[in-house]
Every structure is written in C-alpha cells, then in structure tokens.
Image (cartoon, rainbow, N blue to C red):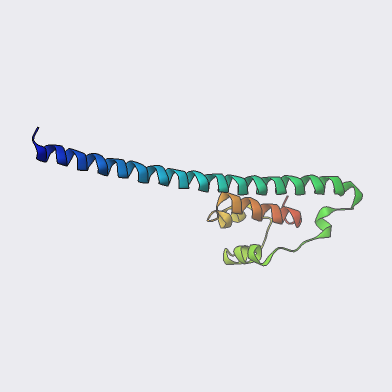
Length: 120
C-alpha cells in the first residue's frame, strides 16, 4: 500500500468515527425525548385513572356526576365546532373529528367530555 492510500483510509476511518459519534449523540437525544414523552403519558394516564376512581368513589354520594357539570373547555368546544359536530352523542363523527389529534390528545379530550357527562 502506498502512502496516499493509507492517508485516504485514515481519513475515511476518521469520517466514519465522526459519523458514528454523531449517530450516538442523536440516539441519546431520541432516547431522552422518548423518556420525557413516556413520563408525560404516564402522568396523563395516572390523572385519568385517578379522576375515574375519584368520580366512581363520589358517584354514590351524588345523584349524578353527569348532572354536576356539562361544560367543556374552550379548546374542546373549538375542536368540535371546527369539525361541525353539534350532537356530541354521535361517536362516529366524534372519532372522525378527533382523528387528527395524537392518541394522547384524543384520550384527554374524551376524558374531559366523559367528566363533563357528555359522553360515556
């Protein structure tokens, strides 16, 4: 092997090492983002489960949870209005309207609507 070939191989090896390091950093960032998202999802699930359990525990003491509150947040109302849904009981239309949202957002919207007594 001549010196020029050795130099090209060394340069290629350095480029490969740099690329491997960049990939490793990217994977670390993706992993950190995934952990952050998982923590947020776990909090949402815990809040939903906690809210559901609290509602179930309080339900016998009240006449009806649905009668207690029938309002939605402005964001949920805007999503429904934008999709042209006036009858909240139409689950097919509701699912279609929420299809553009992420699964976490759909869960949050539906749980808020359930808490409001609009859907079951």
